[in-house]
Image (cartoon, rainbow, N blue to C red; front, side):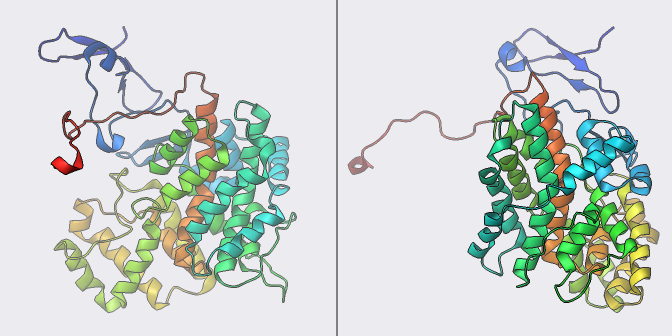
Length: 427
């Protein structure tokens, strides 16, 4: 027997609403007929209790600390997979076989160059422009250069645009970094892996051969995997809403990047490094943590809006953080000793344990990115690079859904009631 929910509104007949069941997670009450049958809307600021879509891509259980990509636990993917294989999984729903993986990697590798005129766009930006400001502009501009993949109803156009976005955004991200540093752009190399290539474009110089460090490459690749998707968050919902109008995929991803730029969304690991700078010295950690308890200071990188227990990505990033610091000999540097002191108090102090303020993925990823030599201003760009495949997967799923409609949220109007215009002489 199918489940139903009954809505009682004073003065109206009870309304039976169907209850939909997912394969995992809570049931969902189908309210699509409420307005037609009752004349009322629902009110849910932030859409925190509303399912705006049906999806098969990512599942999160914040209470249990679970994160699955297409059913695969994030811990298994981070340990055994690589970023491009994870991209294939998110896009197509299954892990690739050997031939599929090789073909996908080749497709991505051979799309990494960007049009030479696009590179000239950067000359229009100030050198001190924020890299995310540049990313919003140049990613949106891709639609002006790749007009052979803008027909969203054509599956081959969609596939081509998706591959171009995954391949070209690392190139553009590296260009943003190098432009802000006054460094010449570095063209991609087809003999390097996806993450090796990004690090090469970021850090190599024309003066000497660049040799990727496998420990550091693996660490950054793992960051990409852990940030590849996170269900219906603000930026993913922005991409879906933009895409619901029929906008081209390059414009939709630019919209996602703009949303991610907000400090409440993509800037969390950046805030961690700023907090460490403000604390300044490990000797101030006890005083700072007491200030956190007294609500005098904000503790960044601890706790999570979704995960009410340990963020499943944090354990992986903790291990990665230790590997990177050991590889670079930074365990005893002042900033990283300060970070580890914060971690120890948060993991052992009853106050933080009771409030479940565990270190989250942003705490460790901020430390790792800093150790890799990536400036704080680029942290959200790295996030955008990693999340691109998640945005694309959700966009693709939505476009391919025959019942999808243009997004049109409703409102509770609390403004003036009807009034008549009064000529200016009579006011």
